[in-house]
Length: 569
Image (cartoon, rainbow, N blue to C red; front, side, top):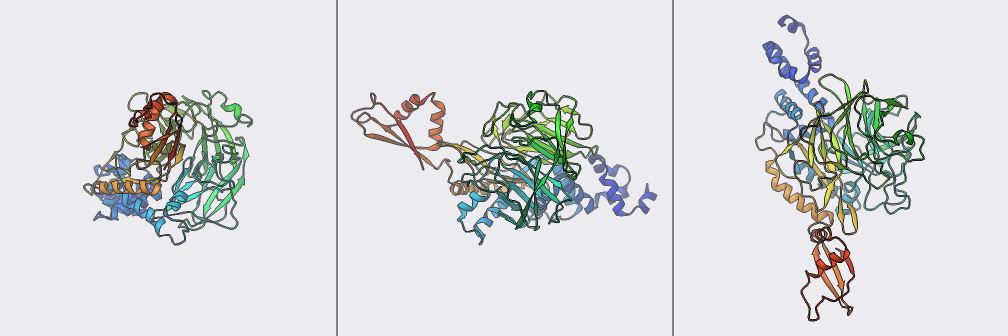
């Protein structure tokens, strides 16, 4: 062994080590001292492994955040510690200082003509959107907004983690102008036929439907499967973008929404599983029986060609509003697609369905054989409309609507081991900014950045202005994240004020009219009024509960007839 090491260049040793399974790499000290020293002390090796596990964007976040305190930043020990933290994916903290820096960029932006509240509405207020990471950027695409115009284009918000800025990119003059959409899916691909850009990757957008709730066309499916919609960034900082509409051939639906896609083979291929297809679409027959859909749609990006690939093994029912990721296993180097959750029912646009369980299913993207996760052990609460992102050899789910919508508890955020398909609960050393009452987050935790959500109000759902940032704790820094507990509480209070949502600080005024026409007015915090709504079985019982909260007058209200109106401040 020593003779081999004497002639082996460091670069060659690094390449060999990168092919080792993680446990074998960590145990290299069992072979000989020189191999241990050379492998354990290689910055390139350990930083490269961190890049493989976390991706460029998340690695940038952790590099910057850990380096502010760690005395050994940039050393092999630093990256080996980060690799071990990413490998276990157990200890996290909310980084309120990064969050505040990003929000401060909205206040400081001289090009922003709106006030701060309007800027947040434009950049971090959304639901039904998607998120991708590319270079130093976390990109939020599409979604429903509180204010939308009939001819709005696809909204794009960029979080530049290197410069700590949030903004909307400008479109180049030669860019396509795709219309707004929600419940689409996205993934990062390599499309060498596109013009040169700042990154070798592009973002592929598939399907979706009109998300403008105030438009007669709300819910109308968007055609973006046989015509591929791709976005490139023309500047490394994300300030300028260009859309392309590229025709594709093969077997695929014209319209699809509520689906999930993921790229594999280093961005050269894309897998679609699940989703809803209009009955008049020629591909609808494949999902008519959602319990017997042993296939996936596969896109060859370079050829721009779709095909239907048959699958074998214990496949899941065809899903909607589910989660999915693709990953390359560190253990065997094969590509896998993992999916779970959502609903097995067909869903029309802007609707939902009965919850499916969260058991994981894995599809080998070489053999196209399914493997079902274990039926025993912990399962997080079933849900729809949640965010999902890969974190090393795990994936994290965040938020969603279903059996867990409180923003607290071990089930709201959960992690799935992509090898064993077993669920677990990550640990956080501090608290997230508080959510307004009756709210849930919907954004995917790409590189730890979660944007958007929804809240049930007296007048129906309202889209949240919401930003949360979290990361792995540095085990070399005792109490990492704990010092930000107070900052998180302050951030939550500030956010509640900025958003102006129907949270704990807002009031509902209820006017109950008596027989003599004199109105009785009751003011209640919105959460209290919503609790009364949930306790009452019908409109009349709600009125009775409200009357009990008004002090008796000289005439008394026992025999009055009442009607109920409300104003929301």
